[in-house]
Length: 135
Ligand code: SF4
Image (cartoon, rainbow, N blue to C red; front, side, top):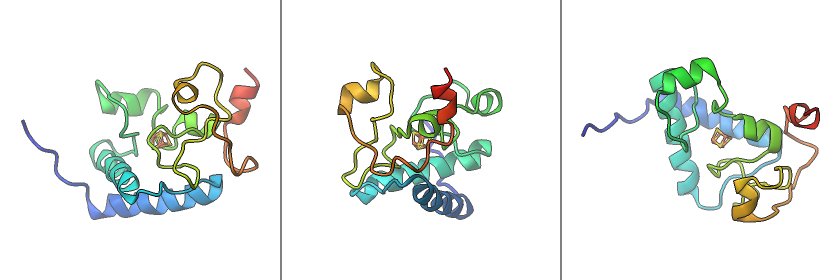
């Protein structure tokens, strides 16, 4: 078994900058356990180096390159974040470290796991909410 090389400094810097900006844009916070954030940041940076885009590191892909080229659904910020402000990686969360589930549809696994977690900044983010509301 081979071990993947660590992500490049350039990719890590790009992701850190993006994460800080996107938190401000969406009114979300960092997880209180910095190790949670760090592992997601490194995973996103790894994918930038590998496939050129920040593919979500919390999913399994049969073929990352195909996923990036054909759907983009899981390129960060993923569709679930842009529509429901739900981040299952816990990169964009409430100050208590919980993923926002308030906007998720009933039956979504996020609701089953965490219950209803209210959005502390409902006027921010959800840039693709119209896709959901129009459905
Ligand atoms: S769940 Fe979505 S918003 Fe969260 S890290 Fe993955 S791609 Fe980004």
